[in-house]
Image (cartoon, rainbow, N blue to C red; front, side, top):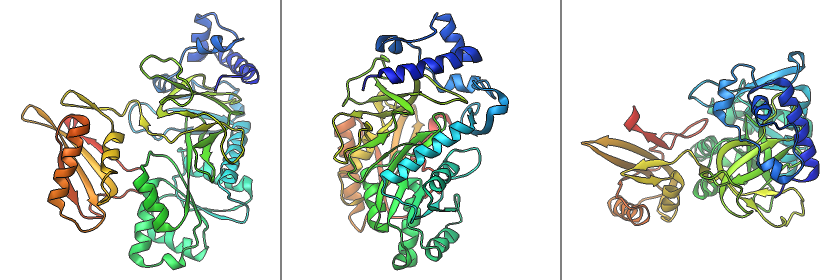
Length: 411
């Protein structure tokens, strides 16, 4: 997807804002002697922006509007380093709500639905984003926030919620609790809007079948409004993203060059109309690809594939580069295994070791299964891990995001 003339004009408006604000990116543009872009080549020569740039701008160094125009701030949910503060104008909040409303509509959700919102509120963009879009749609918002699972289920039954908004981890926890309590026939859920973390096909299938609902992947990040910048439709052929608000590129993370549509790489996003803290060529480190061609739904909005991981979540073990997705794909080949796993990396007696804990989906010969999984990992990745097959429910469940990789070498 090449940037078009309208988008280039919007980028020039953003360049003007950034130069006037003289923030980190404005200074870069001035140093490069850039005050506008006229061609695709001009745009592709613009420097990238990174999360570290945003951290260094703490607290309000990203602001490109007057302070009295800022109606809200949000902060990224990251736990490392200085937080990133993103200021929003009233128009930014409204634009985000419109995008989120569009997400609900693409998922077939209407103003007759009752939407139970379980992601967190506060500085994090999740809960309030789901609610803003819900209210713009005219649906009934049930703003529960995270945790208090028993109360979640009580409200779900009493208010007959039809849509659940959650992380995949919490959706799974709720599904398991509903099964445990035998209350499936009292639950009226039809759809789930799931975001915030990467999740594999096995987890998707479990949540969908155990809750009896259609699932919709929603995409977003705090730096770029928040969740709501893309979602899949009922045909589930990738996430439509809103190219009237954002321009999206896929680059080779190693070279920084654009890759052709259909090839996997790192998502880079430019905000086209944002007022409070516009970003140009922001490296998200999320890995996906732009899907060429048209969706069966007929929408002209371009499509992004599932988020398969992050360019910075690589683990180096015994000199081998390993991504969590590779392990997940191997585990997915075994029908005897469930969706839940945990990887622990240790350094003992001068050597790295990887332990994989994975839940069985039923009763089977755990020892035999452990050997088969270890052999499959050795065949695909090149070294043999220690594998523990454990009973369903053994691994911790999360009300937020599940931590699947624990590197004990640096603890």
